[in-house]
Image (cartoon, rainbow, N blue to C red):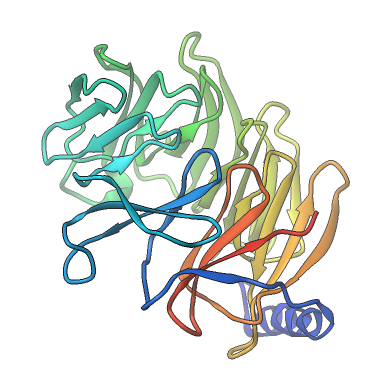
Amino acid sequence: MVWGLSSLGLIAGLTFALAQNAPTLKSKPVLNGQCCPGAIWTPDSRALLFLDGPPVRAATGIYQVAASGGTVTRRFSSVFFPSPKLLWAVRPGTAQTVLERLSDGRKFTLPTAGADVQWSPSEQQVAYTRSDTSGNYDRRASRVFTAPVFGAPRQVATLYGGGVSGWLDERRLLLNGKTVPGTRDRQLWTQDTKSGKKVNLGQALSFRGLSASPDGRWVAYYVAFDSASRNGMFVQNTASGARRKLSEFGSYRWRGSDRLVFIPLKQAGSAHVLREYILSENAWHTLGTLGDQVRQGDWNISPDGEKLSYLSANDGNVRVLPLPD
């Protein structure tokens, strides 16, 4: 059985009960006037960046507001995808992606064919997947490349119906896909880009929501629409392969490398609850309720793990709250 009505109802009922007993966390709007979806944290956790322009702002650009609210300033006059450490501007194209170092404007290009680039923790390496563009997706060849900044790309893997899900450290990639076209299951594995060593983490019809911890030691994901024994929410050690099935199901974000914050599946209309799973304790804690709902899964935890931002379903504004320890 997959996620059936009885299972979902049980989880939703538990979430409703938690909301009834949880303290309401106080949030503050830092952007109002129903602004702005897609806000992200700066690396120092002091501010949020967001895209805006006319008619609200005088010019299109990437703007910044402090985590406490206040004056909005334009941080960048051009539009791009910022790297996590805010060292690089990424401008994808249909053939080439241009990467610009923000400190000095030096640029290089990669033949990504429009694919997303994945940054290593140091942001001195990138990885990307180039896939065939025709035929059944599950049978399309996907070629994974890595490249040092300002260097030439090198192919490190070929798989089908998948690609690279991110870097775990400066050597290991997390890969997800079929090793042979036409097979039912996808594989999840790590691969050393220097030695080629692989560590198989498992197989399933598909792995969804893959998200590695900041230190690369763990990966969170869920499996759905597979057999009852495979379905569920999991965290898995990327070195040993040891896996834990979690009791919650919902939206999740890492809070440092030892804590995973969840907004569990809820009953319609009830406020969203924040729960936290601590890996080193193998224990759950309820942080509180938003007294609100997150709109369209738009929420993020600051890099220092101390604050949470979200787009409010109640008033449409970006709000920030301090997270309990």
